[in-house]
Amino acid sequence: MFGDKLKSLIDRNKENSSGNDKKKIENLVFLVVLLIITVVAINIVWNGNKEKSTKQEINDKTKKLASDTVIETSAERKYKNRFRRKA
Image 1: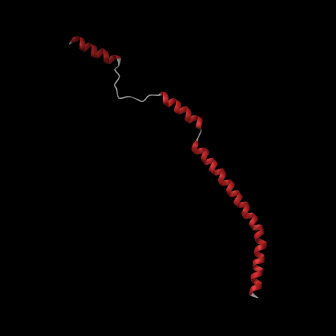
Image 2: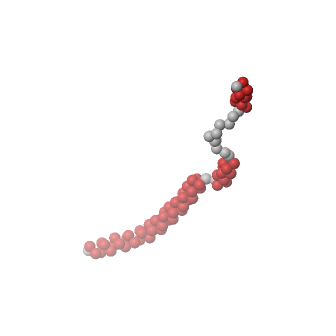
């Protein structure tokens, strides 16, 4: 009696599992495709556009940083020259 019921449960599980297995595989394939698309999209966003960054690097190479030396203006030179002549 118990063995017959167990066999009938196993047979029902096999019949139902064939449809469920196909659905599970379909869901797993969809999940894998969705993950691949997500990873590619994140990679594109994080890397950005390479052309813009190379243009910025080229422009940065030609620019100079401010130096610690003081540049004299023409007004300061005139002011210093007045005092040098009087002295």
